[in-house]
Length: 116
Length: 115
Image 1 (cartoon, rainbow over the protein chains, first blue to last red):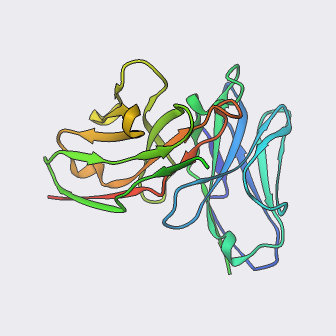
Image 2: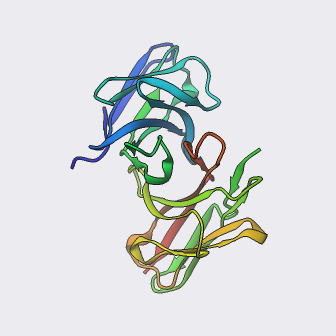
């Protein structure tokens, strides 16, 4: 079992550009959540996807959007990048039948985004 | 507003010494409570979690945590720290609202272990 896999592991973007991050959930998991972890801070909840729809959203602007595919994998898109978007982006998946509850969530290794 | 406070930003202990990391939460009801560990450049690994029942919970790597409702605390402990325990530790809560579907994290405590 590969666990939760995220790609790429690192990337550098220029201010104003757009970026897409990818997440493949753990086998048997159908819900994907995204978190942003700025340097020196705890992760912050961005949103959660279940059945290809955004089910819950944190306090992030509309520049942050996502998508979930029929195979449960997910993408996080960030438009009009700002320097402040530099962070580690973590994906977490939850098992089928839990309704996306974090009680059994597994985290990926994250994608380190640097905006210059 | 729901929040999690980890009062200690950095803690340094000697190898073999005991450890306690503090966590306080602010929430109207008892949420689900978690401790995660993050090694440099890595994702989050779950150490333990509390939902209900016995207020002393055991986790992986020899860690335990105690839930104290009266103090809104969920402190993490380990009787004897190993050098490999050096990492950042995050306390988190999952509020009932929204079906326990998101985690609210504290700012973390960075643990250094001296040989």
